Image (cartoon, helix red, strand yellow):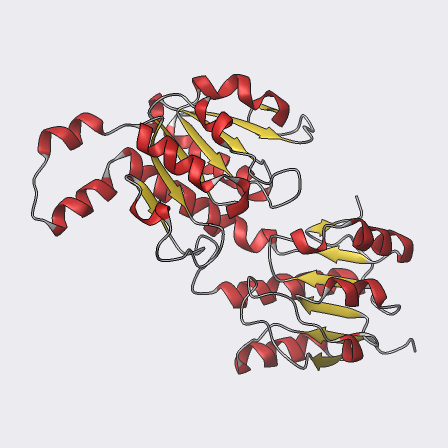
Length: 327
């Protein structure tokens, strides 16, 4: 018989889900981290003593613990984002030891894509405006009808064609809008016309809706800045469900105030939570949700099911879903 595998977990699953994990892990031994992640956004768990002997990790382990471990064979992140692990040091350790790293993008692509679509429909149909009017018992019949749009006449650019962007493009298909994608590396197998992100600027003046799904990295920090917002088609819409630091928030507020952008929707900000005195809270036509695009009632159950599916693949030596960092 081979060596027993030890599975380290920092995700705070409720008792029923924890029992589900224990059952799926058998005959491996489940090791619970000394502290648990309050959420995927709350930071990492430093647990070098327990993690050092484990072979599989699920949750948000500290990147330095991952680098230092000589036993880890597979790290499964309970988030879609993996910015804190996307470093030369972690990549070097992953490649040197043949470690597998996977993320949970396939858990969050559907809710994030639906969330972005919901806000896009709300903005084109002037629903936030109507909700504000209801609070003051106002009836702006002509103005709201005049400013309402249908997607069939819109060109939508998805910037960052990962799993979320791909699913969003699929959801937009039946509405008849023109969807174009932009990403760093174009494979040619994308479901919609997709271009290098270097070509975005020349396309922006002809785009009605820009949807930002970019991850946080040194190359995407303030990617949408004052100069790039100035290239937007006047009166266009902007949605960010990627990461808050991929846009210059004060530049966005300025573009909204000047009417260069008609409406913006943000599920992500910098910092989070957004301070109560931040200009975006009171910027006209800026709509904000508290990083909830990926949330849903069965989030943790689906997250765990995804890990268990991958655990079966891992045991049988098959390719795992959502593999990252080693490519």
